Image (tube, rainbow, N blue to C red; front, side):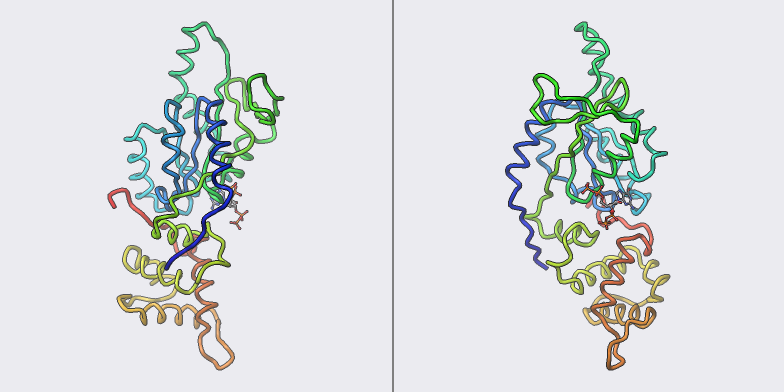
Length: 285
Ligand code: G4P
């Protein structure tokens, strides 16, 4: 399946991000815990050189916990701080604050040695569309956050949110794009719902998800659709869809299972976690 989704406004966004990166001490990068690598833009490593790095593996409520732990170790081995997160949960923000403190300790020390005291750490949030950046900023900043005015030397128009006396957050998240040249990346992002469904062949995409589940999480199909068979052949995928259609009453006019409707339903189940917590890629791959 070939997914065409090159966004036209990418160059400008990249330039803005380059400028914004210069203003911050810490880059907070959100990735989707179900596709921790496919939901990243590798450019960020270059953009973020010399900055403290925090990776928030967001939507971890939907991801496979064992795989999330493996990914956390993988990112940590590459010099990043990592927090597994559900950005909607304000109860989880305390641990984010704590890790930010730790990530910026070195910088604070440097400031102190140079006689700069009490300068808040400046951070920015980056990530691909739909990964949960706005949700995170809203939950993290909460109601207590005060917007600070423009500062001298800071790009005009940039708003900073003062989170506490130690941390300021750039108000607008930086949007990145993943490696869309790689078809596997496109398919994985489509599977989790990060690409507009209108440009996708949903039945084909659903076939990919079903085959993946059959290989790596067969229990999910058994429990939800009572499917225990193999999915080697294309016809087996249609069997799963037909089964799902029958179970959920997706029956067309002639009494036949409505496979397109079933595909939508299976994808909805998958994306919302009703098929269990699933991660589509593993670090060792
Ligand atoms: P963005 O700014 O990066 O584009 O993402 P945004 O915050 O708008 O979040 C996209 C969707 O993801 C939202 O769902 C949001 O509620 C959901 N979301 C964010 N963080 C988490 C998380 O940790 N876990 C789960 N399960 N969901 C999360 P939405 O408004 O319903 O939009 P949609 O899902 O219908 O697209």
